[in-house]
Length: 260
Length: 323
Image 1 (spheres, rainbow over the protein chains, first blue to last red):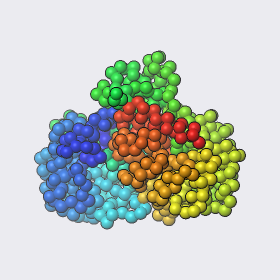
Image 2: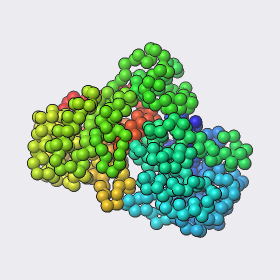
Image 3: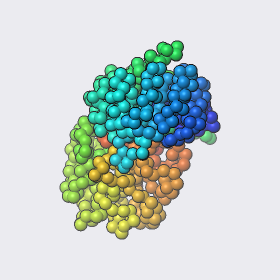
Image 4: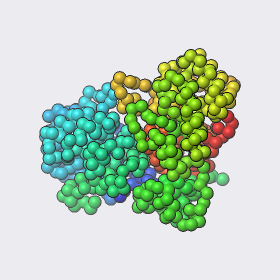
């Protein structure tokens, strides 16, 4: 079982979100990937207005509607527009089919302004995904580091939160979040540097590590290799490839009556 | 007649033989996407050793001779900033062999920072000879910014009988527009050496903030490649920074590439739709990268049988045999 935590509607041909997701699924099939978590729209907007946020989420809703047994949707939110983000949570998650939220680079998650969004997502048992990078060439102004995420997680100690990309520079990212038992490491979106998954398993335990690809900017291949090529037990690989994400997602899937 | 996409077969034995690349043997046919279940893949992917995979194959498939796989981008030794289980040559060769690699072009991580490249190259040649089990082909390093670099080149060619050299311009601190580089190309061509240019080794974003090596600016390269005195040039790890028209221009001038940093879904087939078929080789950048990344990229793309063979081995073989 392989569940991909991190998929976008980019890098493939298709005039509509459904066409693009259909194309992505056909490629995922070649690599044995069962489920895809989809977020952001067909165009990427780093600091989306409320209208763009809704447009992004409408595109994801349209895409996953065509593939209900293969894809999950996460709502793209912007903590610079808290009220609009809360409204999107109600529309897409509470009253819609989405099962998670995606927080990107508009505002650093160490900022307490984000807290109402986290609290509402936690009430709904939605999966919370926060992008992070430790970029040696400089982060974007609103781009969180794993250090920011550690502050967020400390404010919400009972809420599972995914550390997106594990900071890219994973040797730093893993150190920043390893003491926080509710924080998960997302393997997606960086180069397939050997040692990554071994360190993640060593420092966090295999139960807190999640496979994701970040296609279409990345390939499924390079990101799957982080797990399939790692020198870790087979049991750990199964957890990382899908079982952990399924476990994380089960409460909201059950609440929505969605069969995992 | 239009060539079929790489092996679209409903024959389960054909699919069984396709499964093997993760473990070692090679397919000659591939499945129709619709005929392969995801469970099929996972079952194989979980069994990462050649033995485990081959044990599941019908005898006729398991006995099929492996098709060649030439990895044009591996390195020996210790990465300066992290330990790797594959930094021992024997461990790396075991890994490559278990995945069906029949030849690997090896540089040395020591070449990045050492100034005594003569000794680095001597040790590389010796390591390939003693522990390469016939699989490793040494590519020595030359730095045209060092005094006496011509002697390093001569020793690579005449003493170590190397078939090619590997350059690290961003680590060694010279541009591809310098006279020394032009002179190096000329001398390498005269010695019939393949020249590999490592466009980078590590994502700049994850490098130490105090030790930054931006990707090599390869834009001056086209002016040299067009000349009759130019050697055969392959760019390693090129696709972090190089995309679009510059890739097409360099390919049109004869530059070769490899797939280690080629990203995006179906990256291999998309690139082959844009550049001449003989320009792309297999390369893993192991052990810095997980070897499986490059291997799985070939599966992610739908390739014709001709493309499959060319990328796996044919293009590299022709590149080296003409050197």
